[in-house]
Image 1: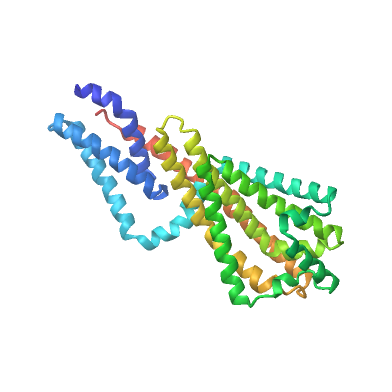
Image 2: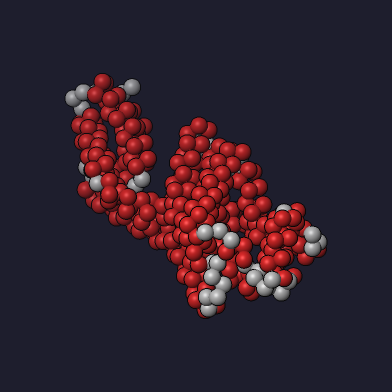
Amino acid sequence: MKEVTFIRHNIDKWKSMELTLETVDTQSPDTLADLYTELTADLAFAQTHYPSSRITLYLNNMAYALHGSIYKNKREKWSRLITFWTHEVPLTMYEARKYMLISLLVFLAGIAIGVISTMGDAEFPRIILGDNYVDMTLENIRQGHPMAVYDGTPEDMMFFGITIHNVMVSFQIFAFGLLTCFGTGFFLLYNGIMVGAFETFFYQHELLGESALAIFLHGTLELSAIVISGSAGFALGWGWLFPGTYSRGESFRRGARQGLRIIVGVVPVFIVAGFIESIITRHTEIHDAIRLSIILCSLAFVLFYYIYLPKKRYLHANEQTKSAALREERLRTEI
């Protein structure tokens, strides 16, 4: 291949790599690793066919700079731990906003089905929740302690049991994305039906207010995390079903990396939700205003971290990219 053809064929890609180098602090390690692999392949080709060319020097300098950035990130592992939560997870959530919306709509559809089915058939909760659970809850209601189910296990055992269960559920929702999104969708739909049937059951016994304050005390975080986990499953399944311009294998790997970052990002949310459920939810004597405040604070966190911050991080990264592009246009000399 002639040198001019090689340059013409790759120049746009190299310009994009330069812009990425300008905003390296906002890039994920996976992105940097992919760029470095591609760049070194071009460098090896140039060194073989155009060893004395300026293009070889240009690619070598860029590869050196990118290598330095990757090595710096490895050394600054504690800084990386911070930026993972402050930048990588929010940016990933913005990229996955389409999957988040789909996940939320499927979950809400499940709640609607649960509500309508229970209103139409009072026995429906037994199908979804089981006879033992419904009979136990009815007995608790008769005894005047409708939320006694949360007070039957020692706090520490309940915390570890609930947290491990919820984290396992999130990974299951993600893994079900292997079934081309339908597995994830079914899991979300079923969980939504459970919530709808559960709350309607308490509504029919004139305990909706008490139930909502108790359930959403921890459920605001827990149910939000389940919906977010659903977006990870849809990212995985979507990458397999609709590869776009990538090969199916590459698209699947990208979806898997994206989904895994989302899942890791919700683990702390499940831990906090487990703490609230095992330690606080059982204390129904806590004033309603305090419980409502915890619910509203939990909702504010979810909206801030998973909706507002992702968009803010994206706009900031986009501005950095535009600024880098303008500087590049001013400083660029012909290769």
